[in-house]
Image (cartoon, rainbow, N blue to C red):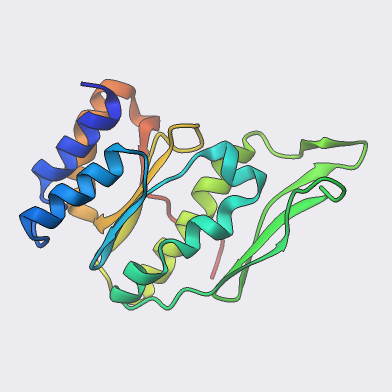
Length: 189
């Protein structure tokens, strides 16, 4: 069983889809196995390819979470202030519910060189941490968990934190502690 199949199995065993009818769960799992994102009431799972996110897809990724986050009491408003593109690559900044996230800046001497150790990880973990802050502030037990964060196979899941941690145990055992994180905001509110 490949790591992604193992994760889906572990999420199912931990009860992520406990409140979803069995026929709908089968459909969700088929979608996920075929490389598509999937959402359900107060939950969802999305590809989180660190390279794609660092190249400007953070807003699209977060917008895909809007409906299930709404079920959790979070009205998500996201926008891109500056993003990497052909002519202008000086910074990548998004706003999440009015809070500015400076994901990275680039070296003025070399516009292809981000001034961060790991822009792929930063563009995955920082937005997820902000969403988790919003979930906490809304009184929800749901969180965004990241599996293999910052990599090309990155994957994000919205669900009850206890279920996500239970499901992550096998992933961490097989792939190491860096294969799973529930990001927390690092900046002061």
